[in-house]
Length: 482
Image (cartoon, rainbow, N blue to C red; front, side):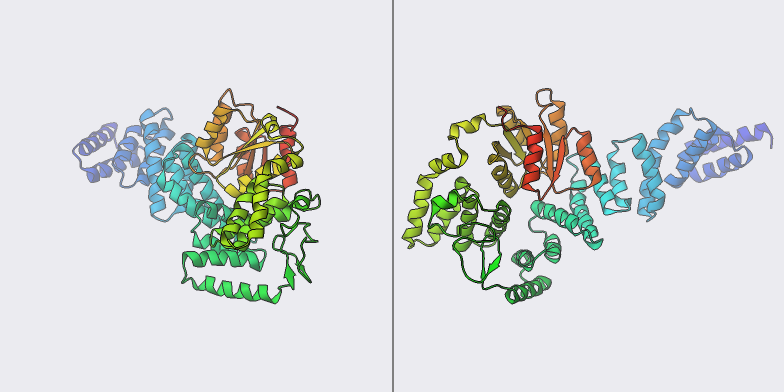
């Protein structure tokens, strides 16, 4: 066909497009591209009248093959590429959507909509988590991503459990329950993955507190109680749960005193094992979320007391006294303990309270009161002063009032997450040199790498080993400083 005919087809096709007749435009211009495959204008106009984003994308790619410098085609590609990916997602073709979305995110790393779509086509729960977290990094106020992230965390934990990664699954599920204490699915999985029937029973009972009609939880409680009863020893230490043939005033397994008969010996006891005491504190504080009785308060206070933490021990012991108002002997001992608190602390710590202000200050940013208490008990015995903050706002206020010498930072926090807080600390000239240790349940390689890239000095996973925590903190901030 002659050059005049090509010009006529192009002219008539453009006229049809301007008149709104897309069908005629496609017919004329497709005829032209068959005759003249290198006609840049024909392909560009065809992209504008394409029936689907995928067709438009194909036409624009053809334009750029003919002329890589065509700015209109390049600009159009930005919009059409994302539209084509969204169409593939809606059509149930994730494999076709993925390469398109990878192109978008490579060219536009902060494209919020593209990362949301990437989360939908991710091949694993971990991949979906990473994409949703990227959305929240771009826009922390994205409610859709926040809700999807909660579901993705559950799916990731379930995937770990099904794959046999029990410890990782437990850590992820505990993070979920910290954020959402009424998440029945997460609690039920924690019960299934529990190390002991006692732990499983506690989780099943929490499920029943939320939903008394939960049949699986009812059966779980029955089976756990039967197993516990079948293996129950003649006597069991209320703190470390070790069994023995007869009740003891001092457990020979954990070394803890179990009465208040000799408070001074208890407070000066060098043989108590701290790990079972920390576990007892966590166990009894969990029980207090469901019920408040004498034994729970009394043994919670006793666990703190065996750790020489008189400040933390007195309130639960006083609560135990209120539940037994006629026990004058117990009340007198607790009142003596409260009055002697300062003197006892001086004897244990070897210095008066005023020296605490000269100790290196460690700021713990974690929304779990239990974790904050455990960190404080661990570090304060080694010459540190510990201050807690539940979120970034509280942490900022603490930093402004007095610079800490080291920061322990959780990742999953309400509001700004730990990564964002770390970024802000490093960006501020006055706080940039403060050592930061990530203390979190997240144990993925990507999380560790991201923490390092943002400037974290070390990374510790929960549940933490007290000796590892002290060693890491000491390597970055000597207790002889300040």
